[in-house]
Length: 186
Ligand code: FMN
Image 1 (cartoon, protein in one colour):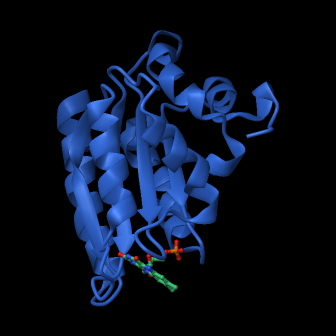
Image 2 (cartoon, rainbow, N blue to C red; image 1 turned 180 degrees about the vertical axis):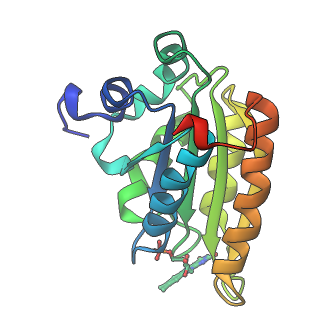
């Protein structure tokens, strides 16, 4: 929060004509790195994304992503890479997102979303933040495009991410009617 309007992700999406935004809740950078990779990879599908730090966003803007679709001439999509800390808590940069979703007042009707959770199964509250975000977005009207990914840093988080994103892109292509050969879209 505290950012001016034209620095927010909505205006960035508009000005760069991007229909994908990838948010991350990250403490030591893994979720942020994954977010960057996913956003970049979208180019293959005509869906190059922007990466957004929720700490720098006005959460109310989440309710307005759907409305960009007319302007951007295609479906929009919000992805959340969410790490869990402490007693199943959000990362510092995702605290506000957590509070906003918990408040339950935001209406994200029709928002296409998908969540990949980063955690470690040796902790009692395994992936609690990702699970919460996934559940809450649906509760508030969001459309889940692909199932929640449960990344486990105790085994192989990188493999979990790769497996999840393969399924994710497949689902996106099916739902958005995107051809697999993507070069034309870049
Ligand atoms: N993972 C969970 O699933 N639940 C937890 O409660 C949890 N607490 C953690 C506490 C500490 C101090 C650390 C270092 C890790 C914890 N993790 C927990 C694992 C992290 O969420 C996981 O390593 C994640 O990949 C970190 O992402 P980041 O690099 O983006 O911050």
